[in-house]
Amino acid sequence: MSQIKIYGLKANLKNKKEQLSDIIHNCVVESLQFPKNKKAHRFINLEKDDFYYPEGRTNEYIIIEIMMISGRTVETKKRLIKMLFKEISEKIKISTTDIEISIIESPATNWGFRGMTGDEISLNYKIDV
Image 1 (cartoon, rainbow, N blue to C red):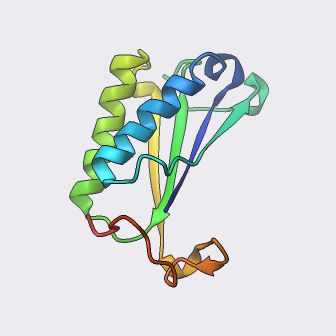
Image 2: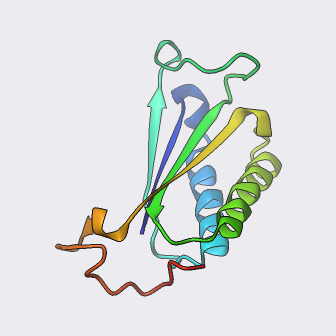
């Protein structure tokens, strides 16, 4: 299970949402061996006066938060992060300096979906990749 939030300036995300979502999802499918039909993305569109970001970043600056059930290896998570940097910078032309990625993990017992907790559900994909 994973949930992904993408934060950025509304004016800049407006024409990039679909392509950015597709790139992120393809990276998750490839890196985490995630099913293609499990796409849960939320775009947090911020106005300029609601989004403060570090010096040296441009208006293209985005933050990607990936929340997922614990269990992936360090190598798998690093592969995902590096793939996201590469694909987003190449395909959408957002500099890697303007991309920040955070993976937040939580045990399956802390998740609830389809009326059960995550440790009670039989998933159709592996977590320990």
